[in-house]
Length: 83
Image (cartoon, rainbow, N blue to C red; front, side, top):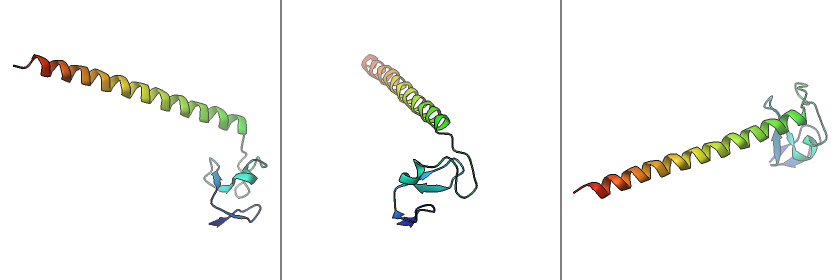
């Protein structure tokens, strides 16, 4: 367990800022600036970034699925045609 730099509670539930500093999840909801380096945290930008990450992840999974299906189909038919 580590201590939050804002509330001094000991916890394992930390949230990291883009500047790589961390605070507990409770304090994260109440502040807009990193307590260490004064990085301004803009929640709207963070939400947009998270949505973009989720979209990229979903697209990657769909692409991987179709590649796997295509390769499986090709292997199946090549084995079927072999004497």
